[in-house]
Length: 115
Image 1 (spheres, helix red, strand yellow):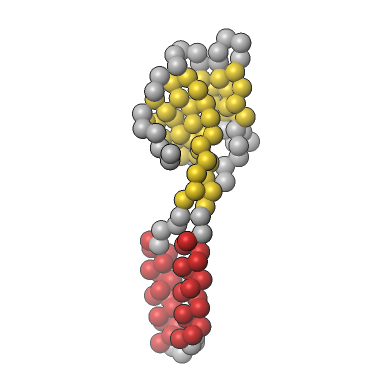
Image 2 (cartoon, rainbow, N blue to C red):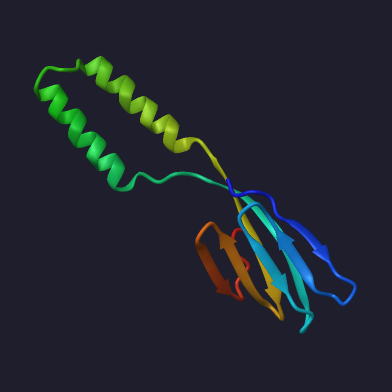
């Protein structure tokens, strides 16, 4: 998870949000704020699951794994997919436009993402 950013405000209204990997400064040009947005997500299968199933099917055909062992492996995948993931974005807002920052990903929008 992305590090928590410390948010401070200078006497002139300049906002600074600083973490181990990011530094965001918002000049006092309008209505502004900075905050950390925390939320939970769940994984979605996608390509990795398809590749895992193909690999499992090949192992079953080659008698390298029994059906009960295969079923136990699938149950482990389902448990992994249902496990929530904690996420954190650093958010800066200026006059209703938000900048969501996570690692190298930056999204600018007027939408309230990840409520």
